[in-house]
Image 1 (cartoon, helix red, strand yellow):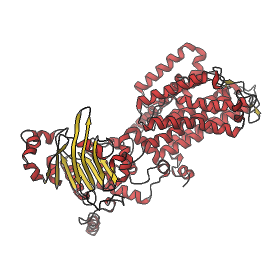
Image 2 (spheres, one colour; image 1 turned 135 degrees about the horizontal axis):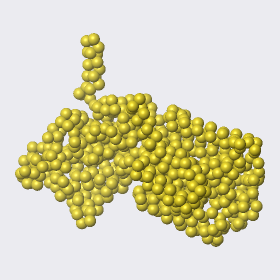
Image 3 (spheres, chains in turn green, orange; image 1 turned 135 degrees about the vertical axis):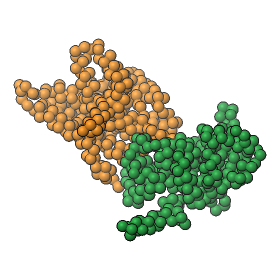
Image 4 (cartoon, chains in turn cyan, yellow; image 1 turned 90 degrees about the vertical axis):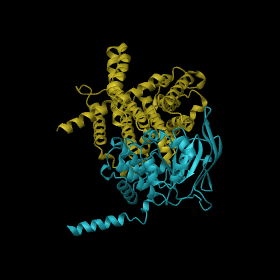
Length: 290
Length: 350
């Protein structure tokens, strides 16, 4: 009995060795050129909607393998920034580069996604009419053309990867359940799992812990830190506790441009930041709000 | 890899509804053929006109299948699928008239069956390709797409009504004699057309089932429910939509081509917006996104129509409208949804 337990323990240790990342999390070979610096480069980006300046001369650089947290009050332009990076919104002015070779402003959503930018939405969006494993299967990196998709078959390797990801996101028991019946937190995790299946170089994660319980939040924080290093991760989050637990560098957005950038402590002590965001009674609103 | 592997791998008959539907279709078809073969004075004998009527139902079922493929699985509500049906029908009509005297010199080429057969799928397919490419590329969705499909079929109705089109104007194409060298009124032609329609329904049903069970089918359902997400995962949504839309139009065209020789006429009224809306009602009634629901809905509604227009011709449209209202309000999943619900309840209580 104890023999078996120790064996199982051994296997678990081997599976979750802290000194290396899971194989499937390692990014697939991608054509992105990061030899000359950052993986994401935004310069003087501006966009306005009906006269409202959503993004105003935004400059942002994300290094390869970096974990960056972006905070800012509502309407600071966080989601619009993600829309621009993923090709949903075209800016009026400015530059957006993925590595030093790919101009994001000349590509549409599927091209950008296939190049290796994955996105998690603020509101969890999973395919509710499909099972958990089918959701992951669709997100799996592969040939996305119509004919190839029709003929695609889930091979052994793919099935193992789905199993592994389900293990990570804690949904192994829900394999054949419809995604629509999962709890809010489980949907958040499923969406993160779908991102993992995509093997992106850059992950854009919009409010990953919204609606999560405390333990779920800790697991998410673990996962985000583990992902960084291999992938670059940009997290937009309102929950200051969560940001503090994972952040190395924090960027504060305000009215569509960068207000401050630095470590959590530097940022938190910046008088301008305190003024617009962290200061006064607002901080508690922000923590609980949205 | 070939298409055959898609069919094999998805093990078509593992789903109970697919199995039952296939058996019902095959047994039903055989029964009709046998009953038709009985001596005419036998009490159970089915005469030619009944067999033709059932054959017409089969072509409607095929059309409903085409609509369910894009509406049920891809969420594209086409209110103009009658146009593709009619185009296939006109292609067949041109072939049949060209056997005797083509209406216009260019139509002589349609006298060759392979050319006509190609036209049956290519005419609706190309229209769907151009129309779909423009619409999906511009991300026209939802009710806007439905409205322009209505406009499409209405415009075609006006065009085919004009004599300059060389399509027989408002009379359409009729007075057919021969198909593939056999007289349309000959012994066995009625049954042959009925069987051809039945086989087409069966093949289309299996084909659609294979597609909806493939990964592409799951991408379709994902697109229906969360289109933006599918784009950000990296699928080219407009290509998926275009491919399935064109396929659906081609199936509708084949349905039209089988319809024409059994009914004996094709005219612009098939392009009427109302007909296309009626098709959608069949599918809604039977139940979306099940395929067998579409078959069931088309059969039941058209049978009711035949019976009721005979008894009380004025009441039919009220009944059709009433049925649609009742189904939308109380049975959003149609009859198929109701059956699934009852089955689940029985399993729970058992």
